Image (cartoon, rainbow, N blue to C red; front, side):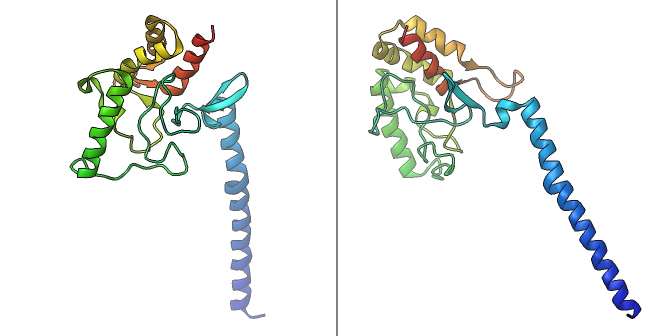
Length: 203
């Protein structure tokens, strides 16, 4: 065997050993270590920030969902409603409508949505906040503004036959402040709020 062949075989064997070592380190050891740390220190977040009621998963803190009357596309007056979703809250099909702010279709849709939200909640159109009629960039945003939650209080209280003050208290309890005190805006997690509302209505 000449030197060139022997050198090639040596390089091939060295490359194979490196491939095997890196496969074990990067494909087995590293993922197991990261998974172990995540499960140990951030168990809830690592599993998708699941929300459970009586031990059953009912959703995620990170993903919005529909609160329509079962089997219809009409919003259920008993529940707080989230932001509009271009994907019907499907996490596998996230994304906005991609319509620009000056697009006639978007303007028409927003005007129609504003009228519908105002009538549904029994408030003037001037009180309808922007997040009530526009979707988020992901289309699965789980939160709404405190202002949007506030215009829904009377409708929700009436539909569930509970006091307005009690519902307002729930909204306040489920309102998260800005991250670190200055990042983002205060928001209300609709899923958590509706779970608390259900518990209140059943008392």
